[in-house]
Image 1 (cartoon, helix red, strand yellow):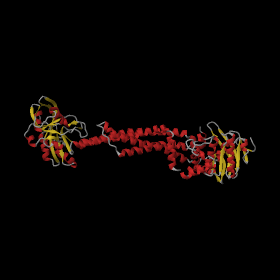
Image 2: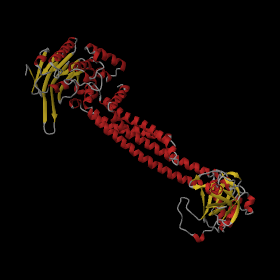
Image 3: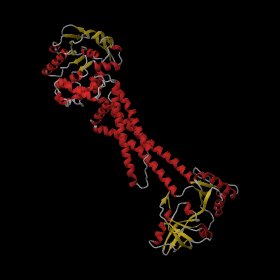
Image 4: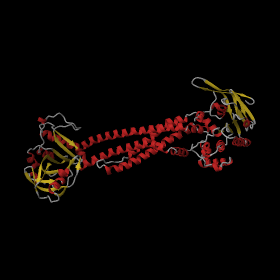
Length: 402
Length: 223
């Protein structure tokens, strides 16, 4: 039988019940849109995290004191045996490890920062001259710490944007003396705006030299050693090298952890994958529910048109003609519904970022194709039963049906 | 061309088995116009359905065009209905969602004729039955007589050898009824075999031969 005629006939029959057809499609539209949207949000979140971590520099290893599992979760505390990481550890890594480009000893703490009558409690990061390049940080005006300043324990500082604005307003901060803790520090630079990255507000930090920070916090215990590896494919070798060097210095004990940003990324990827799959799965269930809606309405439609089926059969329609007619009708419902869902999801995922800043979206072709094929399959699957039922009607019984 | 031998048909209902036809022997020659009469419930419609290949007899042989129908598959029966037989029903049985010409072309759809030719042939057939001006009307816009004429056009569209009419005048006033009978007589003159089921004596008398069914068997004369 003429396939164009079948499609036309199914269009006619769907159009003669516009509201009912639309409501049936709505089930599929919502299902398809949900799958595509949730995947696009999941993918958006992944891109967001990748970009944020990229902002913090690439090929970075961080050594922290204490042994923790790489997969997250801390081992039972063995505080007495944990040896602190000190400045010399960092220096040794930089000198000995062949795969390491740079190693910055980082101190972290907080202190009162004061200028004239303005003061605030502030996070203080103590580091060396290479920290900025490792972490991809830039100064807006002035400069960063120099090597000689680190060696000479000079009291200089670089202010984050927010700190500068709070203490100085619009005035020039370069060259001014601020007090951090009990000492005066000279401002040599102001940071470029960086914003919040993975929950850390880089604009709200004051940078000083590691050596000055040792004095300020009265300890030589490092917060971490931030290491830049020469290239991405040397990360593993670098990790091994660092371990060897530090184990030797720490009396044969591995009482530190070398964390790789890529490892963190990998863990996050895993979590995001699972999340995306779970969400898409839930959305797919709604698509199945939409399919049941199609089956329901097709059963009603078959029942309503029992007489029509009888007439068509009397005029020479084969069972397969009737089957095809109703199957095309349910497929039309699901395919138009699928297309509508794609359109809807596309629009929404385009609009979302304008309204919800922290929710980036990224439309994925595979999710669109998958959702569409799935909806078409749902239309066939749930259309077969009613269509088969229609095709098996006895012509005489169908003709007599009132 | 139609030959029924000892045709029996019974329906199995949950509690009883109803034997509707108890052994019908009947011959219809080519180009004949015959009327089947009988009281309601006598099985005349069932007999017509069997002749029209809409139902299979429980037993007996039905030879149509020298072919044993009981050996045919369902798909082959659909094809026979499509090409060899035209049905006209008491309640017209037009599809209300389609205009007249779409109804007329339906059988051609199932014999694989292309859209353009389908429409052309449907219009021609409507013209032949004096309904050109009604081609785009839906069945609820047509009078009973007009609806039945559309149904006859639909029955004729595939040039079948046999027209089976089940109480074709039953839902019509006597004037429209006469018109329809005249159409059948005209068609019969053109060489179409017509089997007409009716319980109206004056309609039946227009036929060349009358077969009466009573209690599931053939009887001669009127009931």
